[in-house]
Length: 409
Image (cartoon, rainbow, N blue to C red; front, side, top):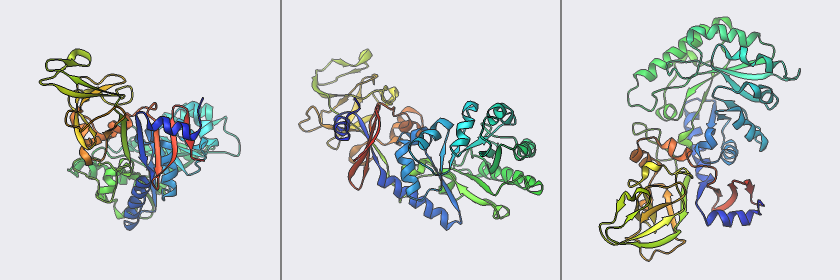
């Protein structure tokens, strides 16, 4: 049984859960929007792919639009359909390679897709034929300006753009690229990509193959205020921030400005308090052996929830404001922490797994540094069985768990 809102909230709070501060997210969207408006930007896309980087796509998408985002960005048509199923009507762009079998549904649901290879149009032709007569598929053409991941080579751009314009079931409405090194301190390759993209647009213009909307800037480029040349000023410019809207820095070279706030806090509770004697080991492989008698706590979170196993004997959690090291291996569903310095720990005490750095909490950046990855992966890895509790104005407005999203009556 799915349970009522109150029942699901109580269940979520009592277990491992993520708290999503929608007010912080809305503020971040507004701060970014205002920064871009001062630069003359006309449009902003909030990227909510991969379940909004682990924060919850539906609630973040709604919040982003209410806070001033003009577009939403996802990676797959399936993600866009989820947003449409929840009543979100804002323009949505699918940024990644598309699923041809869903092209008809994308067109019927006013979802814009990306053409990023010369062969894509041929692949989707059988499905374009199934689109109703009064409907068209909106597409943006992606140019590979040097990242070499997904996008049409500049030399192929004219031919692909012409094919798109000549296809009766396609509305070719945008042109974009993606930066490979915008989060680096060195601007040289970023500037080279801007130059390549600009040259491509200029080559398309005389033949009328350049639509009025272009977009290039991710979070890092948006924060760094990467500038497009004046020759592109006649176009409508859109920015595509993602990570920054969740209050996380693109890199050490491109830190998040102080006006942005953390959105996610990952919490759990002590499931057991026990004493580990000197010489006793803990968890699989007994990779941690106590050097002295130690009070320990078992917490119900593990790599089955998205807590990386490489945090074994490296990461830490916070209990009552105290830093509590992870000892032993992170298991699928549980992990043990050293709570020796916590005053009167009890079963049920709150444990902060990922926080904003205050009260001795481990941030996504801290965790990423320990395991050799990036903060994107730390939050995106939080799996669906971890309930999301959405807060606004210090009140819970929705809960999302394996039974789906339920909003406060």
